[in-house]
Image 1 (cartoon, rainbow over the protein chains, first blue to last red):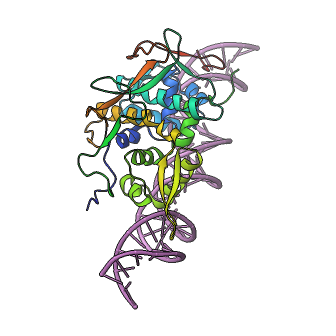
Image 2: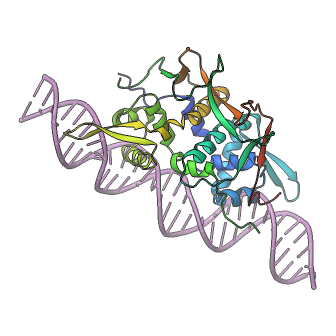
Image 3: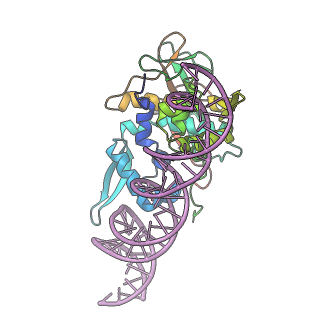
Amino acid sequence: MNDAGPRACPIAGTLDLVGERWSLLVLREVFLGVRRFADIRANTGAPRDVLTKRLRSLESAGILERRPYQDRPPRFEYHLTHAGRDLEPVLIGLREWGLRHLADPPPTPRFRHTCGADVETRVVCAACGEPLEGSGLVTVHEEAGIATG
Amino acid sequence: MNDAGPRACPIAGTLDLVGERWSLLVLREVFLGVRRFADIRANTGAPRDVLTKRLRSLESAGILERRPYQDRPPRFEYHLTHAGRDLEPVLIGLREWGLRHLADPPPTPRFRHTCGADVETRVVCAACGEPLEGSGLVTVHEEAGIATG
DNA sequence: CCTAGTTGGTTTGGAATGCGAACTCACTAC
DNA sequence: GTAGTGAGTTCGCATTCCAAACCAACTAGG
């Protein structure tokens, strides 16, 4: 049994929206305050047509908002929506992993606390707030779980 | 000036290793305890040859470890390395975003605390541990920063 | 007016990658 | 002997990627 095909899961759903190449780099730039097409392109290295497509798909996913900043010719800036801002933990998590495990992690860009210190992600219990450091995590499969036990 | 090309950054470096399609879904499965080729394939939907490539590249990135579990024919299981386990906050972050923002978030799989409650990611100040809820975050560009201010 | 530059694209055509289906190889079960 | 499993590899086509060229609508300089 359990031929239900690929596992339906919020991770997969999120990756459908932001998992394509360039998408998270585009979001990194917007997080850093870079809002215009040419600058995003320069800082990510994405080809023009691909960048256009990614910006449109992030916009239609409700992650970016496209705001005009001049009329003739029409020009736009890209801003994070509330949903977009909620992707911050993912970017911080990727950054933190890179700093910890890449051979020669480049130091920029830094996301920092207003007190000047670095930031990091912690996985915590939503109820008691207790941090989970490697242990304490259990994976639970409520329905249609793992194909082979 | 500042024609330094794409921004060097640990986020980009990490995405070079795990940012391709299927990679994070493969890791999700291994996190959930699914270790064999056929099961990972069934639960992710990745094509065979692509899955082979992704498993090899995750192995050579030091994120997965390939352990033989029988000799003839040679068969393998995929396990997380320490570095692989450190990607947990990224997966939890993606899952959490999906649960919060997808139209119809599927409920599986759940990562849970041993106390039974759900888990979530929090972005905190590395020094004082204070959580950053949307505010309190500053982006700092130490060298070769943003192309246009 | 003419030319060059800027911004944000679209178009074009070849290269790379992705994909499902078929096939292989080494077994195991019946 | 036949069927099935597990982990691939090979094949041929389809999609996507990408760099370069082009375009549209302006602005600045002369």
